[in-house]
Length: 477
Image 1 (cartoon, rainbow, N blue to C red):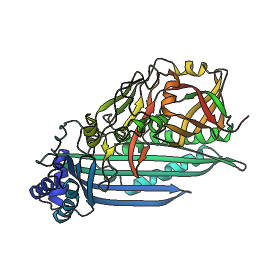
Image 2: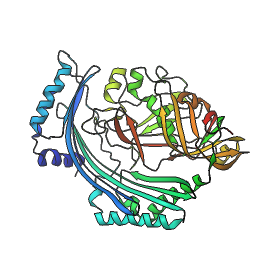
Image 3: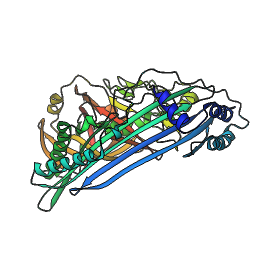
Image 4: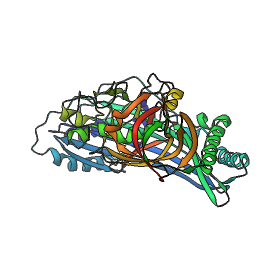
């Protein structure tokens, strides 16, 4: 069954909506508007957590609803409800029509269709029974506690969802998408004396549980979380000052996502509130740096067959060999900027309007061997994993904490350090990258991006990078 046929079954057959009448309501609601759509959503989700040797939480949730949007120039009328009925959609139509009252827009052409899909449409929640999931968490807990006598606490979580959406536009244009999403996360606390440290690792993606509940897979997650925790137990105070910094591959791409990726989203650039505003076609990074946003990678957490406006996902080059060549666009901002939508119109749920958001954002590999990069640093920092951070989109300034980092001394990786923070400016840092590694890697599938109160799943990635003279905050030595 195609995703469109499957979503027809959900929204029109089971929910009892009459498609022809719903299409008439949408047609009337968007009269005079420049753009808009009816977004239908059905979502089932679950989460289980195991802590202190026992099952602490087990939640299951079902939600459904719609969001109706009308766009007139820069103004947006949006109404939503969890009631899937013609009456509720009709009430929403009266609300959103107000935005286009007196406006004589020409409705934008619908998105092109696509026959591609980048993930299964099966529901992961029902393919593994509850008892098996609980046993999995208990096995992980036992394995972690038996791995090292210094383990003091283990927290394991498993979550999954199955989301079906259909997008309707005037004229009967429709598309459907079914999106699975699962995640397994392990945190391990170890201690020696009064000192305790935590390590965590997780995996996930648009796949089924069997991808991650295989013993070989989950043991690897436990081993990595334990390794991080034990490394931190041996860490020393981080130095402070300006120094060369080597960023590891994979998850450190979160810095790229936050400090640079958000600044390349269309809404910030249309409103000229991004540090990259007005720089299209200009050099914004060192030669050899190419940054991509790609929602078409098979099974990845940030991938989408179509975005939440119905535009097929695509691979968008944002920075090409250091030159700014593209922005991340939804339909409205692309239209107002005279550009083409890139399949990045995303929303958290039916209760939220779409906006330009990243999917899987990463930097391409370069010519340098990672060992060569580290060997080039006489004294500096090697940052392998990151925790939280803050970014000012307008100025590009950021502060990020390194959850796993090491000193580099004489071209060799030295002791682990604790409390290191990286402080800088996104566009400035792009110009300070002097070496790009051959080892581009995507993160393990745990990224979640927040913007304007909305959270969506994303992916990040990068190769090993050398950044010259970056400010490191820590404990002065």
